Length: 240
Image (cartoon, rainbow, N blue to C red; front, side):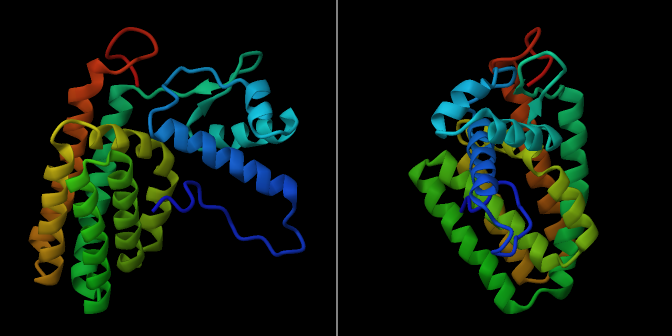
């Protein structure tokens, strides 16, 4: 399910080289480690250690960290070592409120224009969510959920909404993973996704829109609940 964490534009074979592939590999590895909580907010990112891990010089590592800095996952101030970025609770709430609004619009678009075959595709991803939830596999559930959201965006066929949500992709991924890791969260989320798929099947735009908004805001409540329990940069509860 976790094909590419950061989407990159395809390059023609003649321009694709070992260096760019290595930078992409480093970007994907660091991003996944941050999203899945293996690298906590405020953690230093040692370019020398990363270069050793990938058997390379520091140049591709620096390029990868610059990409992650632009994506909002890494902070890199002058004369300071790069580190995993932190978000304030205010920023988190604003991100989720925006996602809730946009995904409620996505739901309406799906009801109005999705084919039965496309709704079948959403049910197929839902089956993977159910399997991961039953197994209690947080990482597998999270990446299946990413695939579900990506499928919704594709079916909704709204390029502007997709562009906005893609720009928030990595900043929200690690928060979504945190929410999924909370006790009981997988089964509740899975049940809500099943209800959403049924609303799509029934062509009930009002219910689908409300369920999609509720899914996002419920995840925000989970993040808020976990906020004081996570390692933070600064005082407890300030940032994550």
